[in-house]
Length: 460
Image 1 (cartoon, rainbow, N blue to C red):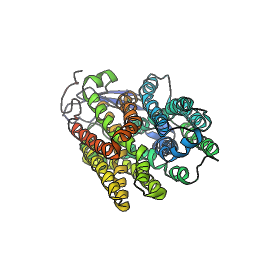
Image 2: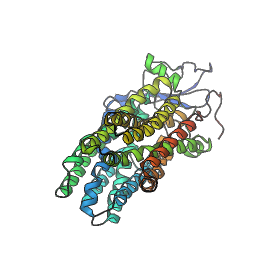
Image 3: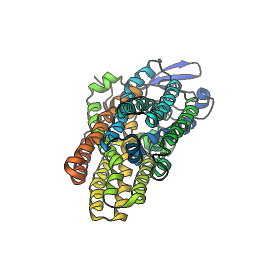
Image 4: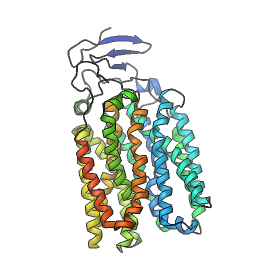
């Protein structure tokens, strides 16, 4: 049995197994080929896009609808506005913090993807029940912030990493599609919390929302399964970059990692810390927009319909933009696309402020559109960049390191954002957000795939 020559012209090593064979390129990276998705799953691999999409749709209500519910929560529980934003900030912290340890447990075989989903489902339910029945803000932080954050974080990280494993050859569009559900899935709840949510029914509504999240994530999670390590889909030549035209273009613009990096090796390349800081800036600005766009619109006198519509528009575009940007990154290259997204995010912050100060409702909605688009588009780009740079085998841990930037950005975008708004007003806050976005754009220009172009294993 022979294998095709790799792109360097050196014949790769080949080993055979039951129903598959492993080939090794000139850099030492191993590809497992020969098994179809149906042989592994018993069904087509697109189901491992549809099921994560459904689960992400469910948990989107945690973050993207929270701003619309904060007035009622404050009144019902007798919390200050700052108290309510800190509850969200605690949730963001643990939703991001759980990604890396959960990834390590998954890669060691201690926690399967199915078990992670089922545990996340139960904890998510407890989060909403706690939010509706907590007698004080401290218990809400423990219930919704800690339990709900860990639960939704388990679901989020499992879903995002699952897609990249099943689509190593064209992960941008698929990752963006799944990641997008985390935003637009909240749209019905934004309007529900804006118009049908008050102090007379808040407990019933929140309990029902919790059970809705439980059912969708539980059903989806029952069918989760990871592919074998180093798996590559049948019909795609990982060495010659063969396949259909779209796949060939995606692999040319986003070549696979030169080998499989462990978390320690990825960290020592210096690229992970750079990604972490870039995501910190982007996520902080995004969370600031989610937390304060509705209050800012109300303060500008736009009324509840425009305020809710602006947030609903932000969520829809935030979600659909993730899919569009993921698709574009397969064609333009992910690093370049990330730079464009950061620049759009900066323009949007200055634009929302400008339109609000002018009391121009149509213009405000236009910049809300841009803010929503860019405020979510960077997430699938980082989710795809990490396995592009460091491989799929340790992606749950490697992406967990990068995604942990969100736990810090949650404190700045939510809790610290409230402090900045109180001290400097919305002018100072939105101006700062625009500047931070420009810093992220500059940092993105420095990202480079470790070892690309080398003909030997990368030193670490």
